[in-house]
Amino acid sequence: MVWLLASSSVFAANPGRVDKETLRAKVAEVLRQPRTSMRVFEEAEHAEALRALGAEAMPALATFLDDQELGLQAGLTMLALDEKVALPFVFAAVPRSNVNVEARAWDAVLRLSEAGESLPWARQAREASIRRLKLEPVIPAMLVLGVTGTKDDVALLQPFTTYRHASEEISGRIHHAALAALARLGSEPHLAQLVAELEAPVPTPMTIADGLRLQDLLRQAAYVRSPRLTPLVCRHLSDEAHRDGDVGVSPAREAAQALERIVKPRREHPTKAQWKEWCAGGPEPRE
Image 1 (cartoon, one colour):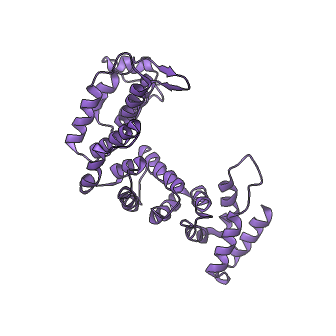
Image 2: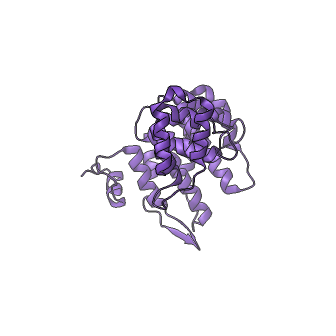
Image 3: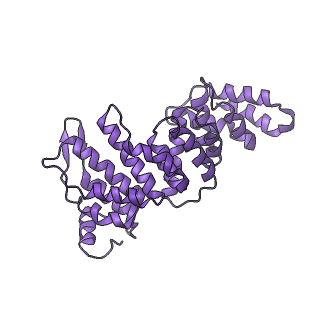
């Protein structure tokens, strides 16, 4: 892609002489190029080729977000170029943008929030998730609304707690995500419902469907991060793993990961044995 980099450098050196249509045509040309190395993703090569355009690259790429042909590659290239700068552009394009680009954006919000980073575009993320959820129950969008929303959003999320899908598993996942988002927004009745579901005994013997449901519930408990859920998560540290063909579940592993997110111990990735000791009243896992 040397010729693309060189060409892009010319644009960067003469920004005042490049009209928007010419710039857009050059960006489209870059986006249509196949990758030259199997060692990197296509969007990484495209981002590198467009980096010399500086601040002009992102808005030019954003004009393709609702494009049927180039929307996916434009969005992925934007996120590869500078994720935090790209996110407001992606949110503004929801729901016209490619759903795979949206998915990357929702995941980025949740990842950055989990890491404790500031979300300067939280308002745009909230508005985008609302627009998406008014069309369909997208689980990551619900969780983003739980992180960026307000109690004014309870009415939008509430119906999803009783949503019915043709698949019982998907219905359960939507139900758990809605409960978790509502609890994260501070809804006491929904936190209480999450507590009640975690308190319910696991069927014996546990089926794969039971295990998948429990794992999903533990993941949502980790997302909510309420200390009220901690002793209930502790109960599952001894649950046995279960496998049926190619599908396996490990609630104990999910419980340990959930505790790490809720408690945030000083030791990185404590073992299940260390968590069991802590749950029994022992010291917090340390290095």
